[in-house]
Length: 108
Image (cartoon, rainbow, N blue to C red):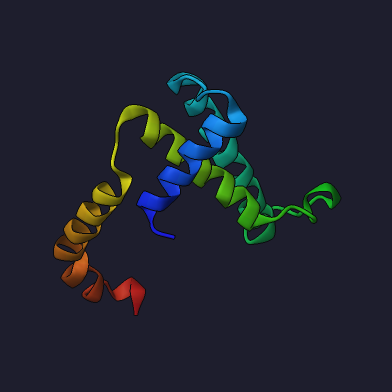
């Protein structure tokens, strides 16, 4: 599924099951909460913090999907074509960062 299809699938889901989009500020708060859940898993599973027993069953993929869902909601409700924006960003990063990363001694 490409990003355009994902945006459409979220829009259909919202209209069928979600009644309506939460407002943009509510979705921004939701996004912050979901990113925090991803950060908690990463910090405990891959970082130096010890993982609590209650965190061991948490699914990183599920939490990343929650982030993606809210990002898609925000894109839909603000009229952003995320596929085009992503394609543009990838092109920009390719032009800007190709040589820079290859010359970075820390990455060798």
